[in-house]
Length: 324
Image (cartoon, rainbow, N blue to C red; front, side, top):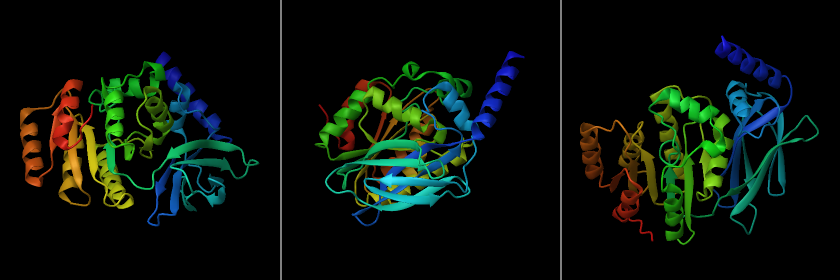
């Protein structure tokens, strides 16, 4: 009865919040085909602006509805555009790239509420990248227990930010990878988590000292393996176009389908894949390992499988990354 009452309370809070205001759970800047242009895109939901990191914000965010048809103001650098959200509450606009910096400010405001700011962030976005590190989040660098659904829900929605733990060794090793590029590498954190968790994940990455980069999440809840595969596969293809020619290091875990997604992408030869790095977690069987190793060898892609941080640190040289 208490659980049912709590569920009704959460649903009522979501409805009440949706009665006024807007919230921007997802926001990012991307390079455009022209080097002097950028693309700002994201999602806006009904409901008052939120910090996005506390438990209530995450629950409300999951229950919120798209703010389709609403007007917003998007500002990149000193340029502002007024946009109307599509049926998904999504927006996309092309801006001139501000000169002289690899860190760019972007903000979203409510176009019908006196320009009230919904979200503001500073996005690291270099003009070029010597190495594109594309990393999964859950169970690759953030302990989530994806293969145990109840634990995943508890960790993702109910555990506080200080209570979330990085996969041992990964913050320091990721910083070492960035340093090994002389500061010319770029990190993309590619997650299938819903947009409602984007600000929480971003805060986790910052608090743990992971290299700044581009965070990509999904739209709604990714309820099936097929949706997760489609989301990540589409983004890998898009990243290969946006960062054309940049070698890619693909990092994930064995909990879901990261090895298969990365190998399928490498087989399409859309970008030079420097290597595939997979953290092995509970349930990874010998038959699957043999299949993955054979496919990687057939595609000529270096493959690193690891369980302990020492194995990751020592093995990175085998995929062409040398760290201290």
